[in-house]
Image (cartoon, rainbow, N blue to C red; front, top):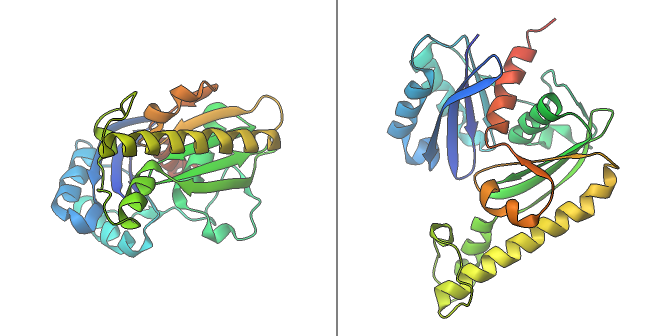
Length: 253
């Protein structure tokens, strides 16, 4: 059966259709439902077009907008979304001190990693923040790390200095030899982030032992992961797949 999946992030929201292990009709909205309510309505209609979905699954790291998404989804599809929480049925055991604080996107990612790639595994999700989630060979989500994404680094340089601009660093690659302020900032942001990304993965990998799968997802994965030279699989739809799969998993016997 088809499921409408909604992944609400800090900077954008992504919607898609999931059916029988396939993700399709992926639509992203910058800014989310508060900043762009009409764009969100259009995106939802695009993702849900055709045969009506049998269910809706919502993962959100912005709890304050959950009710708005539930109202919109119910108005457009007639269905009340299931909100992904730590106490739903999962294919992993949450070996965390406070599992209720685990982000819904992380739950979707670890579920998808187990199903698509096996264990042990590390999932790196590069968005506004970067999450590193580790699943053991006995299917325990037992540790992880959270760090700033490149967009946060760029904003921090602007917010905590008097003269540095808010740089739209993603529009072009940094220069090989910076010759102005924008170039110097772009170079520094990318170098700092790549160094942090590499060092965090290197520190975490020994916790998994041999044979760990490395999976990267998120909006900036294709930009930053290949230069690392590590054995990563890049799966841009990992979170959306996890959401759809988890919806079906709740009703399996």
